[in-house]
Each structure stands twice: as C-alpha cells, then as structure tokens.
Length: 106
Image (tube, rainbow, N blue to C red):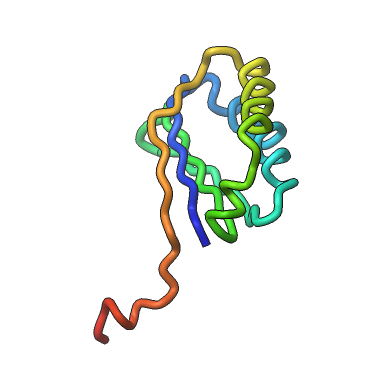
C-alpha cells in the first residue's frame, strides 16, 4: 500500500466548506479509479487552518495511472467551487511497511 499525504492551509472559516467540497469533488473522482482504497481527513486541533488528507492506494502504479488531464479537470472544478481560498503546503508519499522483523528484534 502507498500513502499520498497532502497538507493544505485554509482559513478556519472555510474549513467545513472545504472538507465538504473535497468529499463531493475530489474523493468522488478518486474513488472511480482502480487501486483507490480510501481517504482520511485529519484536522489539526492546535491549528484550525491546517487540513491533512491521507489517501491510501493499493500500489504506486494505481495512483500514478490517473491521467494528468483528468486530475487537472477535477482541480479546476474544485477551484471553481472554492476560489483562491486554499494553498497546498506539503505533498508526500509513504509506503506502508508490513514486515518489521528485519528492522526490530523483539
């Protein structure tokens, strides 16, 4: 499994709307693709302007197979719904380690 982590900044007043529109637009679009396993929304209790999305993919190949033009179209739809109210501040990729015996001796 591969994790796509996205961190956004948005005004505290827009947070609820942002999360709702993300579910309607982005999550709905991503759920149509093979390999999409789910998405979590993390809200920082100490910074109401920070939202983190943790998106789970079966493999990196599934994630990377989404055509760029389709991602652009979804982003344009999302931006039209929210305007210039958010900023991507971090994007990262993680792999889920399921076997720890080679790393940790118990």
